[in-house]
Length: 268
Image (cartoon, helix red, strand yellow):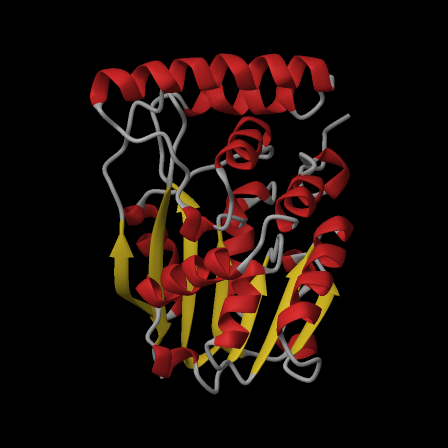
């Protein structure tokens, strides 16, 4: 019997990890989230916009968009724990008339039912849906003419097959086994940082601290990646033109992969 990787039952417990992380959210982390958002979009592009956050996680990015002046933020996530966490976080920082939180899969959304948005934003999510290409196309369909599609997607690594197998194992492993895997990863990463001079830290603009990030990386299944060329090839026939790209070449991926970031505009 084939496995439906779109089903949340087959996914890593993203919602539980985001719920734990949300307890650390403070003004500094919100400021970092705003900084990350403003790297991709100008204040003018956010202010007054209708903003759709697909895969809201902790709600931190939705919160940043609302605080930067989005007219209305719609936050959706397929994981009920993430939905509840997002509601809790947004209720602390935003007026209730500014946002809406829904338990929805991107695969179940459509322009006919949900309308279209000035900004459709999905940071580090669509590669975990179980059908990345279909998820990207579904997200793209929700962008209004002249609107923006903002995506962060795992860049490809030569070790992608290994990481896919590791994540499939980790998401079903016992807590003790997961702890051992995290310690092994951390020890290797610390040694690599010592040798290369790299700082041992997580990119806080992503909205996660180091240990929650390690747990998310090791367990983030389903797992796919996307090259800049592959994304352009997919979106160009749909009428999208690239406005911004922050990417790096394909990596070996000994300690995993970061996300490339993209901003595409739907032509009028």
